[in-house]
View 1 (tube, one colour):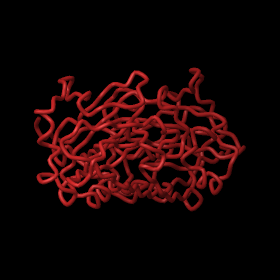
View 2 (cartoon, helix red, strand yellow):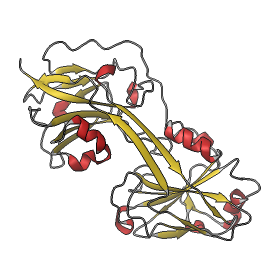
View 3 (cartoon, helix red, strand yellow):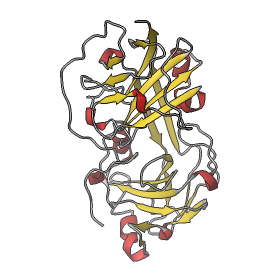
Length: 330
């Protein structure tokens, strides 16, 4: 079980190089070709916190998510139907440092005591024992894993243990909930309950103070160039090559109203159009499709239109860039 390099996953965030420092030109005309700029970007910040439960060391722990009905973003969840994979991760970081790096999107597999993490396909299961898990499909045995569950070797002052459940089977993606646990020699508990309160998310978002981009009404042949971006929505250096997907949504709410419901943008949308961006630094809006395969029709003057640039390989699912599109006439 070796310690590895950085991987692309929701929890195991990666950084890359592809940065610049040139500024975007101001958009002064009604143009279908939009150049993203820092003033046109939204602002987002979040804090994730976890409360660990003590468990007996070197025991066949039970991870139980049968009572989980909401994920960490507050979305409804049916544990037997909506979850595809469970994980157990051992981080060589105390909890406070783990939370700090988690929130800063600066966790790397070099910080894992065991890499890759333990995992288990669920197929409808709502609980599992530690010794049911595998590492790269290799079954976990007590002799193999118990040394890592030694309270003297891995006390809370050194290590953070995390159990997580996710949608799908791509390791580390689509995380729905995490529960921290500590090895405690005085504890007789062998159950790690994963509940609605296991992980807390607090966030702030600002969509109303940005400078909207104006584009021709009813024109689907728009483009968005982010090659001049310097700062992402989290206030960090914009890593331009991290953009993997784009989304456009149409909403009845105002930007200020959407700020209060930001985690529910998918549910609120009157229409949503998506596309992947395998390469390049320009979004071609003609590639956008809704879930029925219909093409993006262009924007109109009703409600709020948002366009977002996403990093599918980053821990935080919030967009790197999001702005308001407003119609204009040429």
